[in-house]
Amino acid sequence: MSELAAFLQWNTPSLLADEIREAGCHWLLLKGLGLDPGPGRPCADLQSLVLPMEEWQLSITTAAFYSAPEQHEPNSIQFRIPLTAANTLVFALFSGQTTPLDPAEWSFWLVPVSKLHPERQTMGLNPLMRAFGEGLTYGALLEQLKPSRAVFRIVLDEESANPSTSDPLAGQEFESYDAAYDVLERYYADVCCSDERSYYRIEELSSV
Image (cartoon, rainbow, N blue to C red; front, side, top):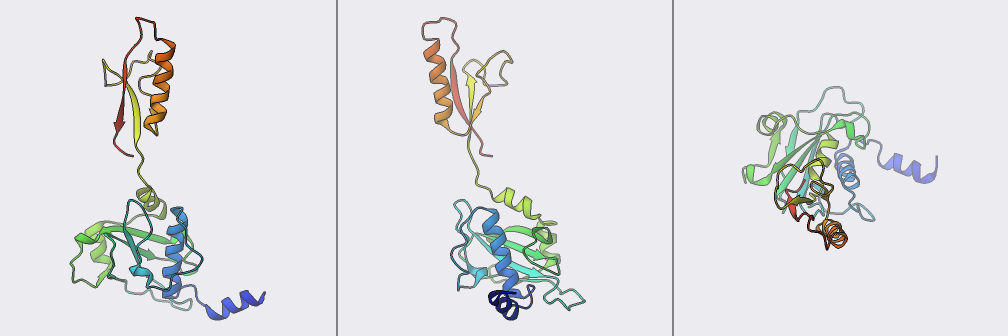
């Protein structure tokens, strides 16, 4: 064992300690969302931090059934509701007894701060589940937090419904308006002198 490994084992004998659990949860979400965790753990209270995301203002509060390796009976779950500038709280529950870096051992709830009583400081697991359901897996949480993207579809001017199967352009979808426009520009350049050319427009669909 290297001296660094020996020091880390001595300094942090339990990965179930509260501060390690909170840091592990932040690490999982930052890495899963492709966000830069920075050169080191912030000195501020992790539960009050707002994650650096474009479309969400998130803070994370965590709790766990077990907070020590030798613990036999699970904890009674109480989440702390931090003072935060975020508009959404991620309630994160760790069910494991080993490492908080295992995503399969976590359950998550996305809760708008506006739906919490402004003077409430804690929330138990049962009230949380009654109000906001069974929770999300790590993968489902990441899917909800992914940035939305616009979809641009080429449609015939004559019919904006389902395209004809014989039409080579109508119904094609693109991630940018410019990409769809380039396709139409090439089409009109090829049939500029034809009386049989079709006319299209580009529609922006709801973000997905």
